Image (cartoon, rainbow, N blue to C red):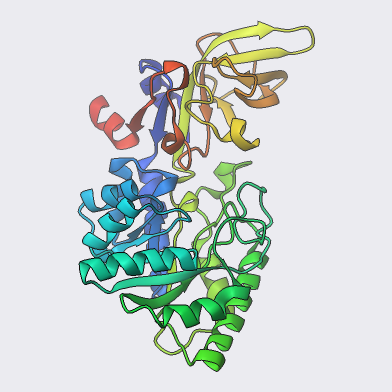
Length: 393
């Protein structure tokens, strides 16, 4: 992915910056669209993974919808020119102002996480003389086999309506005249690499749907299985594009749909994760008593995942693309005055010196989107592969 020509482009740029490989991005989007279209599945890209305007406009160009978890994300989606009927609004704590904005713009629907939220939406629908489409986000009690901060489908998580309360919620929603129940929504977590979790989810959805029909005579038009499909952080080159076809085939083989039901997904990380890298420059190689520190000009303000929950990214010295011998060990850290400002410990590199360029891979998701200006640091710019090539030409 990184070669001498690309290094020469990077060398004269101010670091740190996010680099987006647009060719890889288009290849990934093409494969996602082809795989989803094979089963007539509907994709809503999860904006929270990366809300970069150019990235959103590119995704929109493939006909995908957007999944939003804040009012400003709904606003951003609409500003890209997407049809509001392709926008879903999720999230456990929607404010009245956010609900009002989404209702006023007639989005596809709300994924609701409590009866209390449904009642508030119904009240606003009544005031606006609108019937508002909603789906019930259910907590299916499934372990997504991922980091504890990335799981969302267990009883101890704040997300979703416990399945135990479903009958009560259905009964109450029947009394509310300004909402329309259109679907069921599930999201069990993020960075899921084991298909067994999705198989278990499909089986749970099948059971829930059967019970809904038996007890209430209800068949809903939409089933939304959320997102969560993971990427290969350890060895990105071996899997630059996720196995979308295998993922959708797994769902198709295990999800028993009712007549005319439509299936939706809210993929985020898998869509943008591998196309982005954070490019940084070595400020110092600092000798400690028992180790050496590689101090970068990028820090936790630019990529917070490692500091936030110990996430690991592949880190490469791209100043030496042809050097395969890695016999120097460094702790890779940033300049921010926090001990948690560390990208990884004991990483093997070729001998590295001040001024070398470092790539922190697989950071297209939850990288730029979570940038902060703590200690008044500048935000990193975004650089796109096709723009570099055009400028060079």
